[in-house]
Length: 619
Image (cartoon, rainbow, N blue to C red; front, side, top):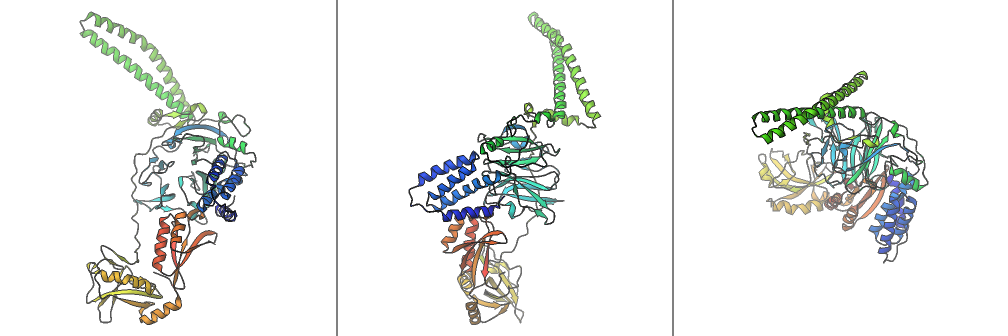
């Protein structure tokens, strides 16, 4: 399959090369888009791609053209993925409400924590309704929103008394959209998850990433392909620990509040084949339990259903308990009626009580007989378990018998697990990195490191004292550097600035903070130099700055493009060691570059850096 960035580049180039219409085509564009979307949802990817291309050519709106290009990419991906299709045996399918479908997965009890919770504090994703945190686990993979609101996959590990600070896995696992429901394989070497932003065909697709032992990180995610992924939303994929089944959920052909949970036979070595008949591919992806690839009957009836033995035992336990309860109720009713009969003088009441006692006495032999047969059947099942070396926990089995079960008629029993009640994890306290940006704060701060960076820099000197200054004397300035004079006095200067214009623009703020005699001091490699020398050096160096942006998925959001455009700068798309980046500039002022970078970050681009075009570094 083609890498996402190369496929998008081809589509982006197509957008630029297609002729631009003169306008007045909005209705036509909308009609083509609806047609293309419908074709894509029907797996007719080639026809959908043609309609998307026609829609691009029908509009002059650059934003609309890019949006259509992204959908064209989905259709092209579908054409590629049709060459690698699996044909799993479908065991069962059952529909659940979207709010609790995950509780019917055959996973550890009390492992799902509803959102919002301590890991996902917002809990606003439509499909991600819980976090999987199994009891006794020493590591947790979970999905949570980042600063932009996009769902990312994080990992944390147990460090005896605290959990490590959650970290993102790597850039390959982060897209321009959401990643949800990360699930680790039993051997810990494969991570399954769903993404709506990686290489796919629309909605959430299912991916797997393998652990690279040599690199010590997760590998590039691979789309699981049809029929696990589809143009709809597919997520929460697991392989059962017993090695029998593959299970995942999807909203294909479901009402808005529901999802179908599919149970497939686990296939360790799937044979993938090419599909040219899109109608056949569409039928396959419906995953009807009664239909195989060729329309024949599925072979799932020959397999032992999940938990069928323990369910049979649990059902018999429930039957015995119910019969015992019935016998007890009958005997207790007889005792109560006999007591009332001995005390009653009313002939009509006595006649009623005598009749009721007789009726209950007639029922007792039948209940006892049925109970004896149920007890014998229960003992027989217990002997079968004992013969097979299976140890049963009666209390646990009795609890299991109270659970809601569905789907037994399909050959697979979906048992409802209990949710986990709350979550209380203690995390490490993050180490705060000192910010050397010039600021006026409610309370001033001394620099953690008084060493100046190499090269030409400027500071603003605020005062010299015979003894150490206090925080209160800083009047909110940060960062304030301290140095000693040859006579032992303490000199205090604020900020680290790379250009004379930058330091000059901050001088008035320092004076307004109460330091009216403040003045600028230039340094070269940490030593004071004359201002004239500094200005001459600065002219020769011609310091400029640029912004480097690396958006997830290789697509720069429209708001980020607008932020750079408002600064009057151009954007150049580059590839650095296979990584797509965008460079904007040049900026004559670091302050202006940082302000624009902040606007780009606010637009949803997490990886944004400001770098100086020249040969000196900044602190």
